[in-house]
Length: 440
Image (cartoon, rainbow, N blue to C red; front, side, top):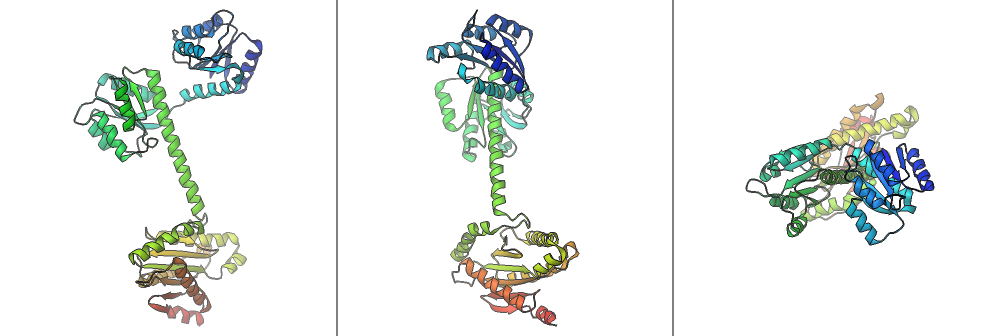
């Protein structure tokens, strides 16, 4: 980044030059306005900071002349002054200054210079849905967006564009207000906002050759994020498009990070199952729905047998592998509505909505057999399972079902392990074949 600094003060020039060099940029220093203009004639720069008070021409006149030069039309220009009055600001903005800042805030000004210049150099990655029936404007805008790094899906018809809009694919919608076909650009904005009211998630940039205040206010009320009058000023359009795309993508990134943080807080990292935090959040909702609609609700608890022995004899890494394998198997065997939780160290819990006791018992036997066949790290692993179910027509809290299933696990352990015991509305049953085998 090349930064031009124009100031008669040796102290300010020295400070500015040192900061620019320290940041890895190239400083161009001028002691007066005419020297700065001569520098600008010979090379392009990315940012200009100029003092209002100069030995020859003042900063406002310098700014006005810069805006007439090929290398100065799109460059951010900040005017430095100790006189922060409205008259000075108005004259500076009329001359083409980007901003007016106090001379004492030079460090913050430098950081702003870096942001402004670097922002324009960065290529975007994204896709724009663009509605325009003027071939001339379409060519200009498409070249502009492609120069920013964006892909463009162009439609002449607003109705066709609406059918092809995808909020997962498109980062920005740009539409002329008056286009061919039965649907106007205004109707397109209205329909998009009905289905996608979040302006940050689906930004819309409107364009029109009829730039009257009433129409513009109506468009903002309908839900556009920004507006560009025609004929388009290339630099303005590029800045507005860049801002909207960057803001949308930052919003998406924050949302994704929130989802990831939520999943981290609710998921056990070793097994991939939900954790106790998730159980506390969702358990009451699951039980309430079952009681309200009198639907089947069953619980399975499985506890790996002799897990301490596995850790002692084969090491904790082998124990972790066993837990991870069982967790993956449970995840693969779950229906969409099932809720699998790592309930304790080697204890896992399955909450099964719309599952009667007989089906839950059958699933528990299947799980027992699958665990027996896993042999993670070549180690024989078995589990004891307890099953319980909500009695039809009787309200119950989920903790009661969990307690019943836990008691069933205790019985399975005491009867020899590697078996299923059931407590529920159908009475109590066991897996006698495995109890007999283990007893033998």
